[in-house]
Amino acid sequence: MKKYIPNFITSLNLVSGFAALILAAQGSIVTASWFIAAGMIFDFMDGFFARKLNAYSDIGKELDSLADVISFGAAPAVIIFMFLTEAFSSIPMKQIYISDQRDLFLILIASIMPVCAALRLAIFNLDSSQTKNFKGLPTPANAIAVISIVIASHYSESGFIDSFISSPAALIMLVISLSLLMVSRLDLFSLKITNLKLKGNEGRYLMILLVALSFVFLGINATALIIPIYIISSLVSVYF
Image (cartoon, rainbow, N blue to C red; front, side):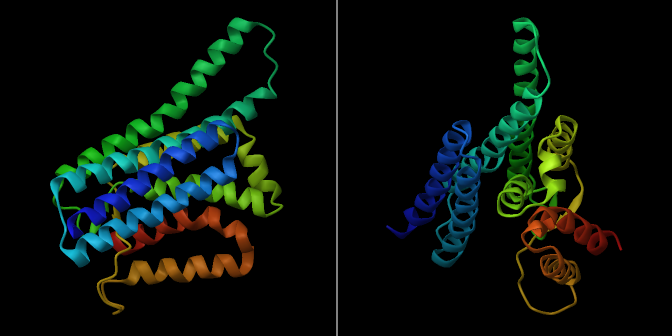
C-alpha cells in the first residue's frame, strides 16, 4: 500500500494545478496562485515520501512530470495570458479582425511557457547528470517567478509591480525570459541540502541571506525577487 502514497500526493499536485487553471481562466488570479503554491508543497512531499518509504517507480516519475507541466507550466501561463489580455485591453482595437488577431497573438505568446516547461521536464527525465545541480530553470521556479508577482501586487501597494503587470512589453519579456531559461543549459543549484556545512552550500546560504535581507527592507514585495536572487546566487556558486 505504501508504494501508492507518493503517486497519490503527486495526483494532488495535478489537482492543484488543474484548479489553478480553472480559477485563473475565471479571473481569480490570486486564488489560482495559492493553488499553484499548494501544488509546490505536494511536489516536495511526493519526493520526500518516495525517499522515506523507498517507493520509487517509473510511473511515479512520469506522473510527476505530467503534473508539473500542468501546475508549473500551463497554470502560470494562463495567469500571464490573463495579465496580457488586461494589459492589451487598454489599447483600442476598432476592427474586430484586428482584435481577433491580437487574441491569437496573446495565446501564442503565453503558450511558449508550457511548451518550454514540457521540454525542460522531458530533458530532465533523460539527463542523469542533474542530481546536485540543474541544467536550466526548474519548472517550480518558473511558477514561483509568476505567482510571486501576483502575490506582491495583491498584498502590497507597489506602483512598480502594478506598472510591470500592466505593461504588455514587460509581460512578453517575462514569458520569453522564463521560457528560455527553462530550456537553457545554465547551471543552477538544487535547493536540497544534504548537510549544513558552509563548504558546498555557499550559494544556498547566499540565497537565504539575500532573500532575508530583501524581506527586511522590502516586505512582501521581496517575493518578486526570489527567483532573480536564486539565479544570481547559483551563478555566483557555480561559476565563481
